Image (cartoon, rainbow, N blue to C red; front, side):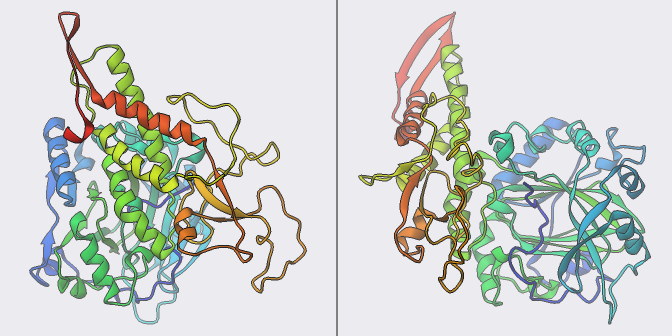
Length: 504
């Protein structure tokens, strides 16, 4: 599965606003001069010490401010053999590419060679009467580029699958691929949006031709509610990614808008929940982009983003509740090993954060006295074991993988309501006579069900994926390990004390 990171095409909506007529004449200083709200994105050098760089990154993540780390093309790790070039991609990359026509706002697929030829032949800027301007989006990142990224000198905390990235905790068949490439000429763009589920975005300019660059407009994390209201006032929904905002309108926004011109070697760090818009400028460029999800991001997504997604019926994609559970198991195992080895001062903040979220998830998912149909294997796993894949039957082993609510698109983690009678009805409620398979059903999440959403016959079966006691044991195990504190002195436990979670 692919998930668009810090640049995305519009979700489920037709882009309403026309593209900028042209970015010809745009300069960073000129955009900043539009108003006091327009502010420069801070920049730091990639050439400074790793310790200093990580400190700056953490400060900006904590503040919710965007940041650019410049000069990666000047580091010893930058490829000098043409790896980052269209010629290399034409020889080693995919033969076809998905593109968006920024004039018609329609997506299509065409041979990669044809896309490059058209892009190089096109004027650098849009003009009146132009019928086509293509932006290559969501392209597969070559394995060789991924290998370079992992050995690039970019801080480990920023790399996909790094030590703080919980996206990797899902089983391989459930993971979302976020590492992608974007190929664009001037006046192609990505509409204003937020990255999925409070993830953190990274976007590296790898290649430019004829002075190509990209202009970024970004907000602080804390301004997400104000940004949403700004879009509502213009008749648009920010989470539908359907509006391209002119710079003059951004300059009148009731919040700060941070502006940058991304050039070769610039790594743009997009804060979680930041509203951002990208407009390409000048010649052809290649950008590589990926997303990270931290434990803090999981908490923010659960409390702030998922309620919005349910309201606007946006697919969740990242499976937040499942990741909370997987992360809780992983960090509980880490604490358990630390306790067994009597390691002092083992960090517990991740587990505390996850416990708060997981407790709320269980309250939402608990069936109470309702008798639920259980779609699980009969072998109950250990609390700290990896949760097995859960088939409905031998004939339909993929049934519960990636199950989502058929109304709002929310990911189904534990509880849902199901009807197999209504699934084959047409739009008028008439059965077309088709035969149901084991995988056919109309599925509604608990949130939609309590709000009155149901199938046509209104008779739905409550179903759960895991035995509830397994989830409760995972919670209790994590709680008991968080409450245990001890440290080692001269080869033995010197102090042991129990501290209530609410007082830590």
